[in-house]
Image (cartoon, rainbow, N blue to C red):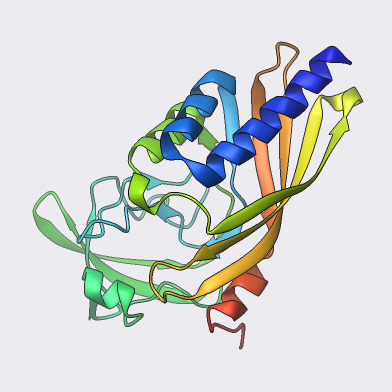
Amino acid sequence: MKAMTSNIETAKSWVDASYTDKDSFLAVVKKHMSDDGFNYPGRFIGFGFIFNPSNDQMVVNRVIENSPAVGVLQEGDTFVSVEGVPATRENRENGVLSFAGLPGKPVKAVVNRDGENVNVSFERGLVSPRYNKAQVVNNIESSDAEDWGADEYRIIEVAANRKNNVVYAWTWHKFTDDITGLQFEENQVTRFQFDDSGQVIARGDMSEEALVQSQLGFKVSR
C-alpha cells in the first residue's frame, strides 16, 4: 500500500511538472524514470522523423524505428523542398509546406546530405514512436523554457492498479498554439507503469487529437 501511494505521488508530480516548468520536469524525469524505461507519446500517421521546429532549417535529428522514414532519411539530412515547396521556416509556419495527408500517398522531397542534394520519396504510414530515458532527457533539454507550460490545467482524477504497478492520471489542459495563436483544450489520460523500486518503466498517453485539430480550424476529409 505504501509503495503504491508513493507511485501515485510520483505520477502527480510528473504531471504537475510537465505542465508548469521545464527545469522541474527535467528533474522529475531524471529522478523517477528508470534507465531502461520508455516513453510512448502516442501513435500517428506520418513519416517518422524528428526535427526541431524552432530552427530555421528542417534538420532530421532522429528517424523513428519501424517508420516509413527508415531507409529513406538519415540523421543530419536537411530538407531542401517537399513536393516542390521550399522547406523554409516561413513556409512551415504559414502552412504552405505541410506534411499532413492520407496514408499511403507518396511524397517527394529533396534533402541535402553531406553537401549533396538527394531526391527521396516515401509514403505516410502508421508511426509508433517510443523514447528511452536519454532521448526523453535530450528532448526536454533542447526545448525552449520560455514556451513551456499550459495556459491552464488540472488533474481531474488519479487511479491505481496495484496488481500491475500502474497509475492512471486523467487531466484537462488548455494551450495556445504557437503557429495559429488559437487556444485549444483537451482531456488526456496518462498511464505510468512502475517497477518494484518505484521507477517509471513505461509512460504513455491518450488524448483528444481530433478535437484539438478541429479547434485549430483543421478537419479530417477525403
